[in-house]
Image (cartoon, rainbow, N blue to C red; front, side, top):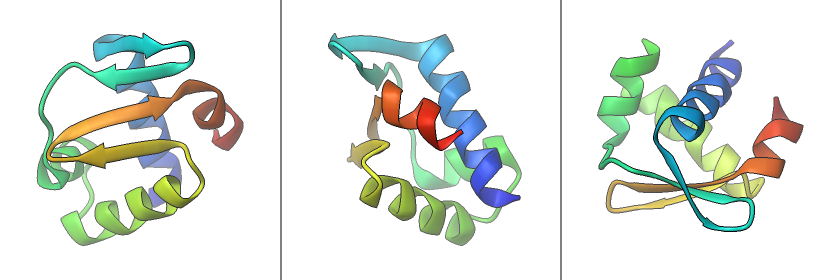
Length: 79
């Protein structure tokens, strides 16, 4: 399922490249485009973008200009 792939990839990015900026908020320490995330997961950019929008609405993450900030607690709840 696409949503699961995105969630687990975000968790991986949080654990491997996340820098805690505030308690529970982790910035991924690399610039990522939606296409790069899609390629990493093995999904189309369109599907990945749609899933990221859903997660943004659920306050799991925010992203702008290739910078992703993940709310750890909300991510774990979503998984």
